[in-house]
Length: 191
Image (tube, rainbow, N blue to C red; front, side):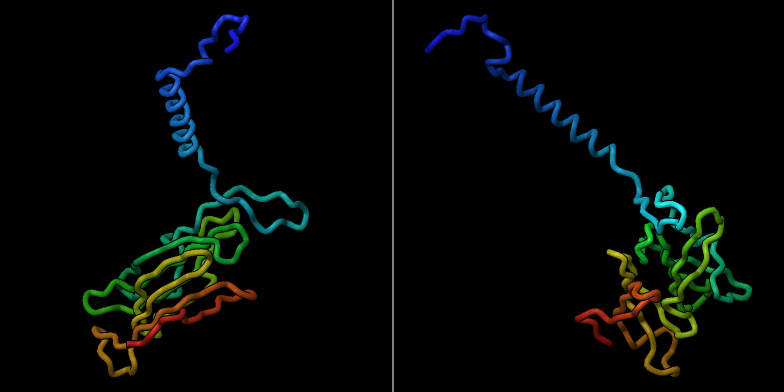
């Protein structure tokens, strides 16, 4: 072994303190990276004049929307909501399950898609996926990968009591060619 002409450097021999310092530095980088996440997606339909994307927008608030549902003297309830960019324009939509507050029974649900234009304060309903007039209850509702999924409980005839839906259908809606296309996923069955 040949000895070096320069004095021994501290970093040429590893000691436990070096491993502790390295582990601490790596832990700090991991912790910092979990805190510093990128913001919400800001991609949007470019304006004709410019290609710059607008700032990120919050999803529409269903509490501020006017739903096409007449509840008379009872109030409208927002049962569930989910958000996602359904049409790929970079702006989030909100999908809401709503029904009238009923003292008894199972009120039918409406499933609505809300959007909100930049600079406006009120969201608007742009699509009705389930109409309350169809006497359907929406369960297992979710939005994943720009697809709305739900389990729909309904009735085989008008004579079936509202308490006891006898038809169960799984449904999916996806934005295609300017409209929401409803499909029945594989493995879906009626009860």
